[in-house]
Image (cartoon, helix red, strand yellow):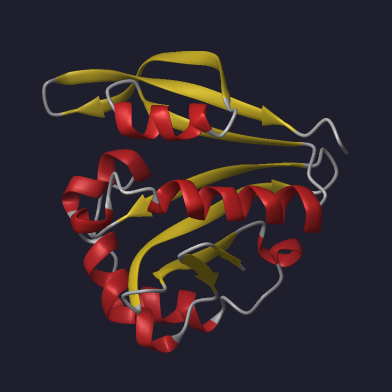
Amino acid sequence: MQFKEIRLRALEPEDLELLYSWENNETNWAISNTVSPFSKYTLKRYVENSHKSIYETGQIRLMIDHIPDNKTIGTIDVFDFDPFHKRAGLGILIADENYRRKGNATMALTCLIDYCFKTLQLHQLYCNILDNNCGSIDLFKKQGFVECGIKKEWIKISDGFQNELMFQLLNHNN
């Protein structure tokens, strides 16, 4: 899947080291609800099983490649895939800070939304974003997501709790 300068692709064994560094970067843990590191063994098994269908696993992770620089800059996920209710959650990480706020996340999200609505024929997508993550809030709003809820004091942080916002995008063509 490709949109302008971004290509979304399946996981490859060569991605193991990148995934290991990104998943074990504690600054990403709050947005991914992670509280402990992942072992290389666990991630290797995850990559080995990534060939399974979204209908088997309920999720898919794709790597985000920046085509002009021939560089993998992040990941984008479909999770909580529910084919009966035709909905799924989305998450995105542009791990390389040099590629943030340059339209790369917008291109990746545009590509994934198209895949979810046209190929998977989903009716709705949602995402959960911490209320202080203005970049992600702007990204999803720009794609047409609408804030539809707030989970008060939902995420424990070092000095208390933080609210999490829920956003939703409906596909009225399906």
